Length: 148
Image 1 (cartoon, rainbow, N blue to C red):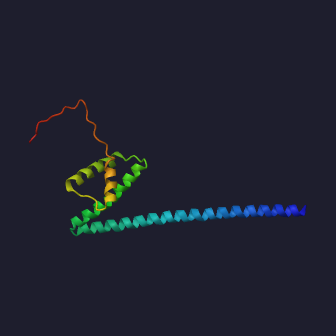
Image 2: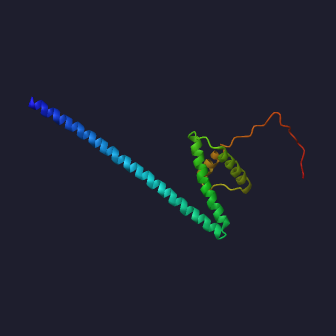
């Protein structure tokens, strides 16, 4: 009888020890993950501050071409992110789609292309999110030149 009680006590102790180890490990992992998320957010904030201060310094000192190139590179990064979001099924807002259309037209006029072809492909993918205007069957078509 005593032998079975000792075995039962030992079994319960082992099970309890394993459960405490698993719970302790889970707690450490959760704390580590949240700490990494906080430090990642802080690093992004710091990077954004540094980038924006550099950009403003270029503008304040009249280096508009350098500032424009820096802004275009930052926008390329955001456009690639929008393309990735769209691939994952995120629907872009109407304001974002309008901004994409404006930027697509501006790049058509300026001729700007990202230096990196992978980024360029992602930018083009973002531009493909712009809905094509539907041609109305009732809209009159005019072929005359309006030279005003």
